[in-house]
Amino acid sequence: MITRFAPSPTGQLHLGHLYAALFARDLAAKHGGRFLLRYEDIDATRVRDAYYTQIEEDLHWAGVKWHEPVVRQTSRLSSYQAAMEKLKSLGVVYPCFCTRKGIQRELDNLTRAPHGPDGPLYPGICKQLTQHKIDTNILNGSEPSWRLDSEKAQELTGPLSFSDGRLGKQQVIHHLLGDVVLSRKDIGTSYHIAVVVDDAFQNVTDVTRGKDLLESTHIHRILQSLLDLPEPHYYHHDLVCDSHGKRLAKRDNALAIKQLRSDGETLATLQAYIEKNCC
Ligand code: GLU
Image 1 (cartoon, protein in one colour):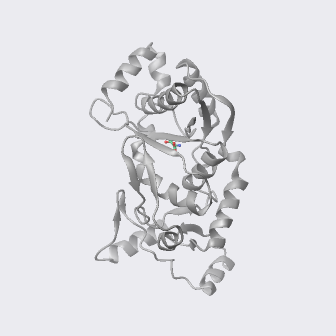
Image 2 (cartoon, protein in one colour):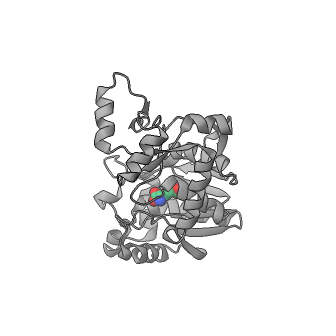
Image 3 (spheres, rainbow, N blue to C red):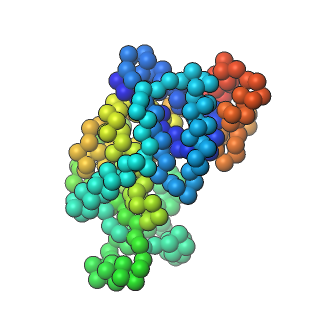
């Protein structure tokens, strides 16, 4: 068994991250497996150097050890590029020149916009662009993002499922998140591409992560099928909430491990808090 903890060095680790790290570490340990660390650092606009060191310090403090080598996604960009090329050659992605504002304008004009778990889905504005229009946009200096054509993907993969250690067998819903962006115009890739390519690269057998990522797993199974990558087992565990029942988020700097450590909290106290405040 191989599990992994895959934080983004874009902020302080909080108790939710500690829970995720301990969960993955303990599962691997229980099965005599290996536990890996991976930095999901593709978003250069948000990554800060100091957070890499901070993450390792926090994990050391919590007694979490990982097997080397540590993977940084910024060193793997050419693999993500290759995956995108394959998706392009399969015809399951299309270029999208929309801005956020343009998408919002279109949604405002629609009487019935399809919705996903996080709100309205991309209304497909660029899906029917002619090759001529695409070429003209690019010639005029517009850089596209690339979106999954969820309909075509469904035609190609047929029915898919994944197994979740808590929820059991889950049927993949190809259009659950709509035509998601797989290659952002600013960074040339996306979380979805990087995570499936790297879970395969690191031979991860069991992907454990918070249940807020359950919907993303539908996309990940589609990508694994299209890219001929192995299918890992999944376990989507609880999240950790604050005392108001609100899920911890990096932007609140809420219950950051660094702060709790300097307040003199022990690992045992933090684990007790996590156990009481799972949500
Ligand atoms: N980088 C993600 C996070 O920090 C984890 C993604 C994953 O485990 O697939 O929430």
